[in-house]
Each structure stands twice: as structure tokens, then as C-alpha cells.
Image (cartoon, rainbow, N blue to C red):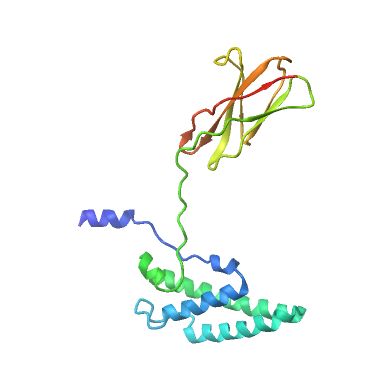
Length: 215
């Protein structure tokens, strides 16, 4: 019994997604009709609120309004948007009803025609960045380095060394963006630059070097 209770406590709650509201008018009506089909005779949801008959009536009105608005008339578009707002509200209420009756079971929720909110997938260890691209700026002794942004990175560590002494870092920097600037460098010298991405799971390995001769 203790084991079952522990498992139940660990089970994450699932929630109805209302992302369909951001879709096109035609999609929202199609989505609503699919919900009607899925809920009709569904033993898990014996008393839909609002009723399916009420939702069907709204969907029929929305279909007619969408058709009328094809002429791009201002009033027709206003009428379409008004009935779609009613459809959205009815689906929100119905989604709340499904949420309350799905028993926190993904399959039961899915049987309603609604979808579950997709859980966020945490970003794991970050990949090593490509070697940074280095450029000379307008000012002598000043360069920039940049890399393609690494998904999941919140900051970047940079380290700069003379090519003649690659393990002695003359400048280091940390930025939140994928670009850094270095100044006060010696014209004529070749410099190596490496970059490391920082994420929630830790830091990536430092990249291979990018290099440039400073002017």
C-alpha cells in the first residue's frame, strides 16, 4: 500500500492544452467538431458542460460566419470573430470539464479530443561549440569573436591566448550573448580564441580555437 501511495504521489499532473485557440478560425471549428465526435457516447465524460448540442450550435454559426467573412467585409469579419470568441469560451469550459474528469490519465484525456500540455524537456549537457569566428574591428588592437548560439546556453566563457603560447590565457571573458570583444592586443601577433557554453546541466568542453592576426 505504501508503495502504491508513493507512486501516486510521484505521478505528475496532466493538464488540458488550449493552444488550439491560437490557430486559424477553420482549425478551431474543426477542432471543436472533433471534440464533439470524441465526447459523444464517451463513458468517461457523461455530462459535458457546456452540452454538446450547445457547442454544435456555436460551431454551425461559426462555419456560416467564416464563409460570410471570405468577402473581407469589415462587419462580416467582426461577426466572425465574435462567434469564434464564443466558440473559444465554450471549448475552454469544456476543457475544464475534461480536466476535472480525466482522472489524471493521459489516455482518458486524449479520448476527449483535447490534447495535454506537453511537458518541458530539460536541456541536458551542452554540445561543444564550433570554433569561434574572429574579426578585426575598426580600432587597432581590438577584435571580436562570435559563435552560433548553443541551444540551452545562458552564458559563454571565452579565453584568448597568443598562438605562440596557446596555454597562457591573456584575456578571459563571460558573456550572456554569443559574441565577445577583446582589446589592448598587440598588432602583428596571432591570437587563439576558444569558447565554452554554460547551461543548466553544466558547461560544455571548450571549442577548438579560432585564430586571427591582429592589426
